[in-house]
Image 1 (cartoon, protein in one colour):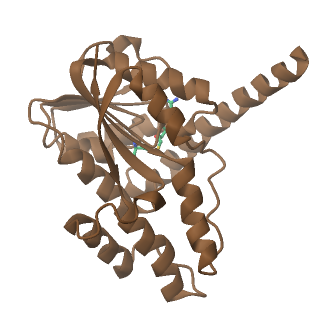
Image 2 (cartoon, rainbow, N blue to C red):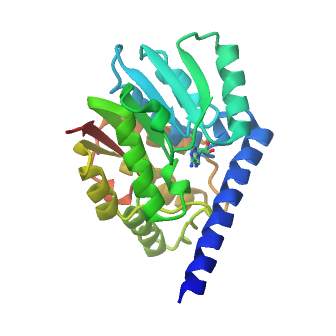
Length: 272
Ligand SMILES: C[S@@+](CC[C@H](N)C(=O)[O-])C[C@H]1O[C@@H](n2cnc3c(N)ncnc32)[C@H](O)[C@@H]1O
């Protein structure tokens, strides 16, 4: 039924436009605010740290879907140079403002869509991409984006990819239900990866060297914290979440709650 196929394609196209508009609006209202691209700024700091501690001083880094460059600016303190890219014109404006006011000279911002990175082919020793691919509306677009990310990386270089995983998101909600909490709803503009699909696509271009989870943080901030403050809503910036982040940093329970970690960092080495 070709007509049904066309209607589905048209809807995906409209959704993609809506998602880009959503990011433009976020940048317009929140500009250089760290919360512009994720309300949970403590979790965001863990993401930045998990990647930052793995970058090298001689890395030439491409950050794809950089938002307002809040993370890219911190990675620029370690790397030789950083090119921060995004497809939202308003995010580019916010990133330019943040870079200008930082005074750093080893980072620049450019407009680029993750679905077409041919201009960057084979130029980088490291590529970061944090919660960008979950904004694409199909697995085929997500697979295309992974190929584009791979092409930007020199042989032997590394991809640092943080994305949302469907199975761990569901496990977290199952745990919440079990203790009497309501499930967390998925943002309308997010399409999580089925882990096996993501890893199958990654395996086409990379060796997966590490899977880093934030499970302890998820368990404490999304299960224990809401129980503690019930019936109030837990605030993202709260002492409990700070303690959760310290627990993650300490490594004392590393791996114990990995199955509840919606976001996962994949550290991947570009193979032949
Ligand atoms: C959830 S935010 C994450 C931003 C940043 N990486 C961070 O860690 O906070 C997703 C970002 O990806 C960008 N983005 C979404 N789809 C994109 C695409 N097709 N090409 C390039 N950037 C895209 C959005 O404009 C937004 O800035």
